[in-house]
Length: 123
Image (cartoon, rainbow, N blue to C red; front, side, top):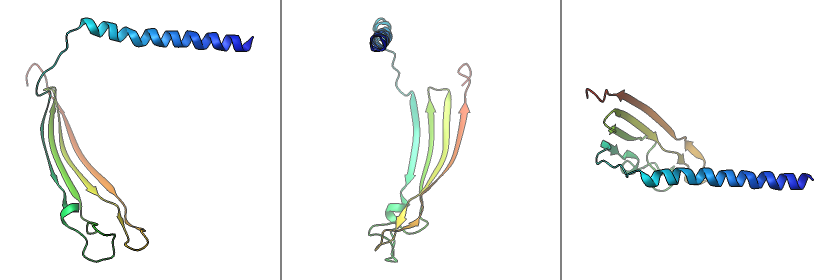
């Protein structure tokens, strides 16, 4: 008796999921596709110091950046003409020793992100 109940509950659940999954598709078919150019716009500048300031000590794995060298990202993005994200992100990479591949510097990310909401009636 338990097996029969389990099967019917599973069949009922599968039928419900199928009908729920189909409902949004049917509703979307009647609606026109809304698109707009420039919904996300802005700038991002990246300074890859970890690729240009390489280790010269010989202690780190081949091609590693020098200790303490960080990549710097700065950005200003507008989303849907009502939201602005701006700020900086600093990235410090993992560094490993040349011979035993032991961690010499742990990776870190530093964030300074500002969020501004704009009134759509008065941008």
